[in-house]
Every structure is written in C-alpha cells, then in structure tokens.
Length: 284
Image (cartoon, rainbow, N blue to C red; front, side, top):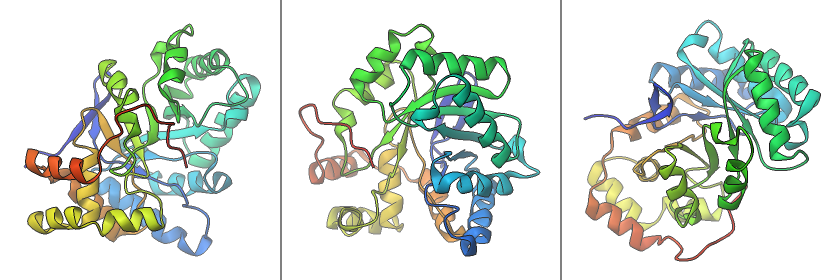
C-alpha cells in the first residue's frame, strides 16, 4: 500500500507524518528515550522533525541535535522563533542560538511561532536575511489565521511563505472554513500540530469515541492511528505528533499506510462536523 506524502517545497516530498517535539527536553531522565524515539522515527522514514526555541527553553532543540548527530542530511529540520525575536538583530541572535543547540549550520524551515512584537514586514526581512546568510532554507509561519495570511500576502516577499503550522484535529476543524481551502489553493502545505488533541478530556473523548473505535477495529489499528490517518487524508496536510517512545513513533509511522474509505470519512464527519461559519483559530 502506498504511503501518503506532502510536497513541502519545490522538489521536496516528505511523508505526511513527521515528528513533533513539544514537551521534549523537560525531564533529563527522559532524554535517552526521547533521542531514541526520534532516531527510530528517522529510521522509519519520519524525516521531518519539528521543534522550537520555546520548547523547554531550548532543551528540545538540544534533544533533536543529539538525535540527528551524524545523520543531519537525512532530516528536514523545522524550528520556530519567538514573536519577540522575529525581527532585526534579535532574530539573527535567536537563529544562531537555535543552530548551536541543534548542532547544525542550517535550519531547513524556520517559522514565526505566532504573531507578536514585530510587523510581518520586519519578520519577512529577517527571514530573507537569514536565507542570504545560508542559515535557513525556507521560512513559514505558525498560528496565523486567514486574515493574517491575507495581510502576509500583501507584504513584499510575503508570498515566499512555505507553510502555516496550526492546531488541527478531528474535534477542531475551524480551519476548514476558510484557512485550509485558501492554503490548498496556494499549494501551501499545512502542518497540523496536536493532531491527536491535547491531553485531557477532549483527547480522551476522541480516543474513546465509538465511531473512531469502530473504524479502528475494522482496520485492526489503534484509535490514535485512525485520528492521524484522518488528518493526513486532507490534501496538502501533514501531521506532527509528538512521540517520546519508540512504540509510539512506530504506531505513528503505521498510520501512513491507512486509507480511510469515503464511507468511513463520512461517519467521522458526521460524528465531528466541521463548523459552517467562521470561528477563531484554535491555539494551545
């Protein structure tokens, strides 16, 4: 069975499931497991790794740096800059610090984590400078809604944005109203963070939902794998679930081979309908 891919930049195709690192690096006793999980993911073909200077105050980038040591060329590396660092000399310093923690001389895709202190024009200027310096390959954004993207498109150089990383899962479908269709029209991949929802009642409700579990039984897979397969069933969407154990990363990779039928997609759609009106962008 063919596995789903997403074309991320000109000529670059990656598996539609990558590896997220939010909450990694927070507990030194877990570091070995986290490094091993990321390395196992690379071996399984989950070669896009997403991190950020925010995660564990840079410690997640250090975990990633250890995991990719000696195999940097296999990985498509994504990191994110704080909004208060997303311009001028602060941005150059922030990128240099991320590069040191990651143990590399370049980040393949560098994202504005969310909008904040600098204007979009200043952030685009920073990204272009970092590209000219060879420190980043492409740049993109995170947590920007439809109106933000229209504003970015009006900024000189803004249309070079390579992706938008937003929260998206079966119980949070607001982006389907306007943001996702627009990104698809631009052939701009969307990166879905928290594709299994955050820990807590919502995640439990998704994992234990009878429709999700019925479909999982038919495919002889886990509920989590069905939820991931649903996210990446959408054109141009990739998921970046965190997996801090080899078992979890193996499960995530297995979701790439699951093809949900039109009938199954309809059942999920009926159980968790998309909003029929504009809603605020979900952010955690």
